[in-house]
Image (cartoon, rainbow, N blue to C red):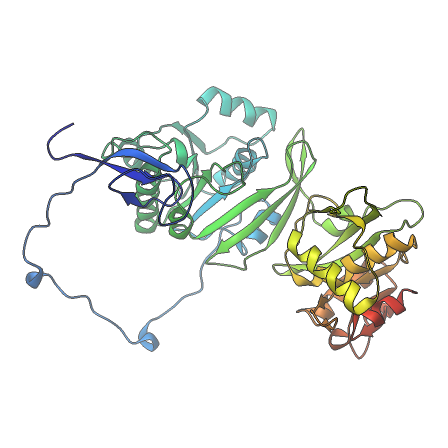
Length: 453
């Protein structure tokens, strides 16, 4: 170690540096994340600050703007999540569990876009032969699709400039390293500096970049949190690798709506688009069963119908269990307290299990009313009508509050053949779409009465 270098401790979660080791990061609060690294000492800036040229500000009304041109990826569901297509000069970060289909969907998209003007796939994890084998197994068109194996940023950027491809995929950002740092690839400093170099190149040359990111065991993107702030769009692949259906969700998008969903089905020919996901998530057969309700949720710019299931059973434990899949665990506990206090229905000695069918995760409050109806149906062992949908937020005083886009949700339900709906009174339209019979309720007791107490 040279005289100009010194050792510091850097947090692998947030990137903050500390002069000495501690069990817990003082900045983000994570435990056992401080790693020993060599501090990079930069030379002092030349020249005097007084001689620097000042930046100029403009009146906002004088700034001209033009309609952003977008390029289709060849996959309509991916275009939807991106906000209508890929914007030149944008940087998109896509993460997900291993084997869920990140490389597959990007290879499919590049194959489609390569025919429109060239595309480059940069692999740092697989060999060129492995990528070629996957492409031929999927039956993709390889015309105009270039491929490069590189992990060094100082060699990658000149290669990108030489290829002049308008679209490129970097698979993955955790495998890149810059020779300006001595830490290993995948470290906080390496990921931050490599991402900064790629973002700078994309903005200067108008190249659209896809960055593939690894995830931690908790499901968050590995590396510093600043990585998500640097890029224009962050996409997450959700679902299990052993399940057929996968959901691509936008959690950040500077060029479109967040929480937009794209639904895909994995097959031996790669990922296939699911143009009507509501029919997939509502593939119920046979007679209606207790504990099942249909929710009309709003994801991004479109309504989506999903099935909410609840199972209420006698608990052998002194502390009954509350288990959720696809929804907030704390929200279930809150709603059960409201059901007891304002609905007169107690499940304090019952185990309650709640699930969203199909691997979808719902975070909006419109799930409150269908979830309580499903819990009540399972407790009383009374199936809800098979042609009924519901949505609505439940307040702590038992009131049913409205949710956004109520009329669009009802139109989607009517289009799929549903005949009745229980909705907040403020979301009840003057004229129901498609002959759908709507029941507006103000309180949880009225909702329970509408399904028969």
